Every structure is written in C-alpha cells, then in structure tokens.
Length: 225
Image (tube, rainbow, N blue to C red; front, side, top):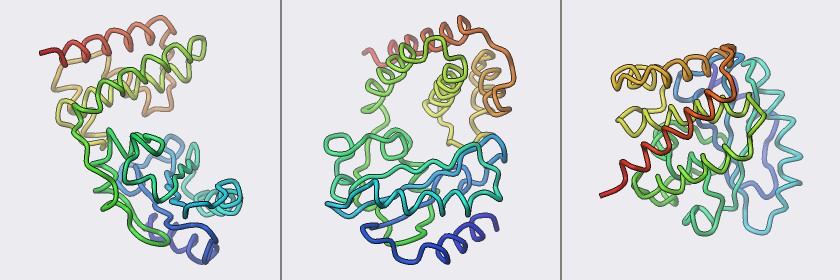
C-alpha cells in the first residue's frame, strides 16, 4: 500500500515533466524492507538526451520529497542519467551501484512511476567482473571519510552488505543478516545491525577503519587465482 500511495501522489502532482524519459522507484520500499527513520526512498530519473538536469530535478525533487514525507525516510535520494548512457553505465554514464554491482536487485525490485521501463537497455554484468573496481571505490572512500565517523559507519555497513551478497545474499536486510550469521563474521554482523539501527552503536573510528581495510584485503585475496 505504501508504494501505491506514493505512486498515486506523484502521478497526480507531476503529470508530464518536460525532458523526463522515465521516473523509477527502486530499493527497500519496493523490496519490502523499508524502515521508517532509517531507510532512504530511492528514485531514478532517466532524462532525454540534451535535457538540462538541473531544470528537471528542480521540478521533480520538491514533489518527490512532499509525496514521500509520510514514509519518514532519512533521505529522498534522486539519481539521474541520460537515456543514451544506459546501454553502457561503466563506459558512458555514471556507474551507480544499482545499475552495476547491485543491478539484480534493481531489475527485480523497481516500479515505473512515469514513462517507460529501461531495464532491457542496461547490460548485465558479472559480479566478479565489477568487484575489483568496487573494492577500489571503497578504499578511495575510506581515505575521503577519515575523521567522519558517520560516513565510516555507512561505508563499513556497505562493506558488510557486499560481503553478504558475495556469499549468496539478496539485498533484503533480513537476508543480509542471516548470511553474515552463516559465514560467522561477528564484527560484520554487529556493524550491519547497528547500521540498520540508525548507527547508534558507538564504534571507534579506528575499529571501523580497520574493519573496512581488513575485509577489502580479504576480498581482494579471494579474487587471486
């Protein structure tokens, strides 16, 4: 019912948006594990080529935030891309995680709110093909987030989730938790639980940094022949 209420509100208030090819809802709300006060509401705006993204987002964002307010999200996140770039997100567009490393979840859990579905345009990638760059991205962010414990905890939670996915988990929060229990990584389990609880557990910066660094090293080693 929450997805239907949101969709009805958006379709009623937006109508046709000039330059917008598609508006897609994805993520935890569609997946069914949205947590008020903890989760984001995730939208993907696909723009027609040549469109000014600032103008489209200026029109879209206030309505998306207004219609999502009843859900009490932490954030209303709006990713965007030009339609012609979707045929090669790695080479031409921005390599959003939901289009690349987590694309299976996007394909299975999305709702087209306006316009056309675009999943047939997006190429399928093997997770192992994408993993080296994803691990490099985590390490780049580890350097950027030094001194910012909130962002370090988010990054540690993402690292734990990636570990679970590589061990057969979906992105469902209960599935991630069950997988981390199964593989017996107590630190990852503690971090991910606290991540879902609004990051209330007071981990030190040193602990989070060492967790991320060590797990990335282990995942890199697993890629070696």
